[in-house]
Amino acid sequence: METEYIKLDRQNPDRDMLKRAAQLLRQGEVVAFPTETVYGLGANALEGSAVKKIFIAKGRPSDNPLIVHISSLNQLPPLVKEIPQAARALMKKYWPGPLTLIFPKSEIIPPEITAGLETVAIRMPEHPVAQALIEYAGVPVAAPSANISGKPSPTSGQHVWQDMQGKVAMVLDSGETRVGVESTVLDITRKPPMILRPGGITYEDLQETLGQVELDQGTGKMKVPRSPGMKYTHYSPAADVFVVTRGPQSFPGKFEKAYRSLSGEGKKVAVLISEETAQQMGDRIHPHYREVLGSRHDLREVAHRLFSAFRNADHQGADIILIEEFSEEGMGAAVMNRMIKAAGNKVIN
Ligand code: AMP
Ligand code: MG
Image 1 (cartoon, helix red, strand yellow):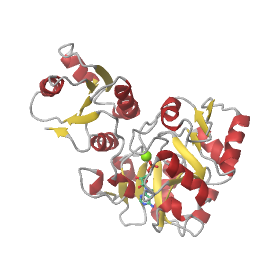
Image 2 (cartoon, helix red, strand yellow):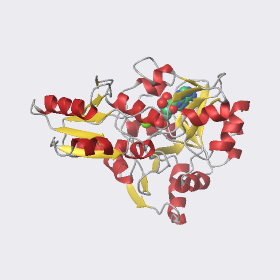
Image 3 (spheres, helix red, strand yellow):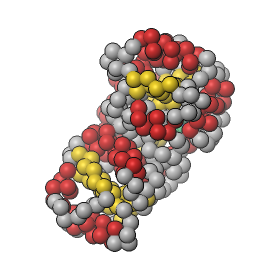
């Protein structure tokens, strides 16, 4: 398949191009588009045969359900059986934005989307291109991240091109995404509501709005998660990822030691570190590739850069990626969740 690659200004996108992309969606084709979290791979959510094409393009297991994206609140009622009370305050505060809510599904949701579940995940993205595309399409748009299944999610149009060239009808490129990790997935059919995947809206934010919110233990280390997708290997670069945890020892010393022992075996080691660690280590180590993710105290910046840093390290031909542990506060919960999954739980204690 020939894939059209279209650059669109984020704030003032070419309306004719957007209408063409929307028409492709209505014709049952797959179009990749930017959102504020990561790039999505979109198809008409009401047409099972269109949705199937997403799974084929990504190589995604069919038991991993998709998020349905809407551009206005009017689109919600037909998709769900009911709107739980807890959802209303959240929608008011965080939509449009990086929060996905789980609702009991209505009959019009095709089974391909929910992988047979009785619930459906819905979100209203805030990115102007995503909003206009959904609006012009006139249908809700099912969209997982626009990467090959298992790879790091794409945070730029170029990342999407690397993975989806020849596999989808069109790629819309509006530059880097703002958040850089996926949306928070919150199950509001339970009391108290439960975070199934940490993401762009933090646990602390949700607690403030809801009073009480639980965190699925599966979002942490190794246990079986309730969100079907979280059980798969995810976000993984080609290189082997190891997370160097913080402990009572001097951190740069511990990181350097891990680096020396891995690079000593003749491996090309990429290091992904905080500004603070970079400063403390100076030029005591000379890794194959090195990227500074941001300050330990600016976890939004770290989230913004994480997936692109994984891809950069792969691009440089690294065999191993050694990455520093960050705090799990605020956006750090999403950062550490993705990092641990990318590492397949390989941590250096
Ligand atoms: P992705 O679109 O690739 O970022 O993944 C969407 C995430 O939402 C996956 O982890 C899915 O398992 C999760 N998800 C989608 N629908 C549901 C649902 N009905 N119940 C629980 N989790 C869901
Ligand atoms: Mg994904």
